[in-house]
Amino acid sequence: MKAIILAAGKGKRFGDITKIVPKPLIKLGEFSLIEHNIILLKKYGFKEIIINVSHLSDLIINSLGNGEKYNVKINYSIEHPEPLETGGGVQNALRLLGDKPFLVINSDIFTDCNLSKIRINSSDLASLVMVKNPSHNIQGDFSILKNRIILKKRNDATYSGIGIYKPEFFQNSIVKKYKLIDLLIKHIKNDRVSGFHFKGIWHDVGNEERLTEVKNLFFKD
Image (cartoon, rainbow, N blue to C red; front, side):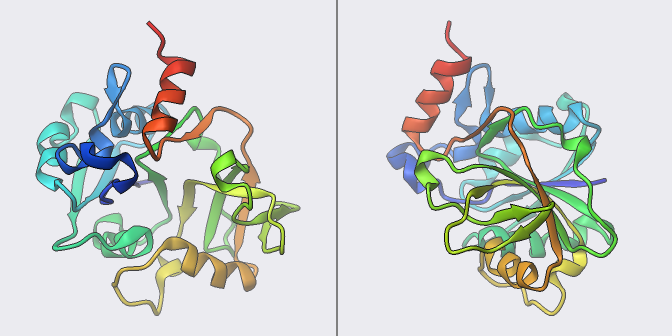
């Protein structure tokens, strides 16, 4: 199975640093944020990786190269002049992802999730890894009932930024700037999305405060 790492955003929540360093290349210990996820993908058998890039894309491409130093194959889906958000970014990369289900993972999460255990049913369009609502998303995104992703007025689970999607998920949509959650809500209402609750290590490293938190938890000298 192929995988795509979402790495095109501008990382504005990090402030001025991401004007010169793209968020995926911010260091977390010995490796950058995106390298941690390349290593995770490789650990669980994903050797063909697509990375979507836009903001400071040359720096990311020059840093990671073709993946040889990680013993994987990396191709790039370049979005210019502006990033297409998570939904548009994945859809724009379908030509590289092929016609089979593929894994999507955000570049700015830190996790030990076993990616090889995620499964998708033949009748579903997506299968999501969900986590307990973190303090920065206390209202949640969705809920889970018997491994089905559902919508409630008060959602008790947050989308981890990891999931398996089928190309058909994007059928009848045009490539434009939009978020994955826009299509997810549509398919959830049609009962085409499954998921499970992950209880291991998971952190959204979306700003400097959360980066410091993860460094203190896992990368103390």
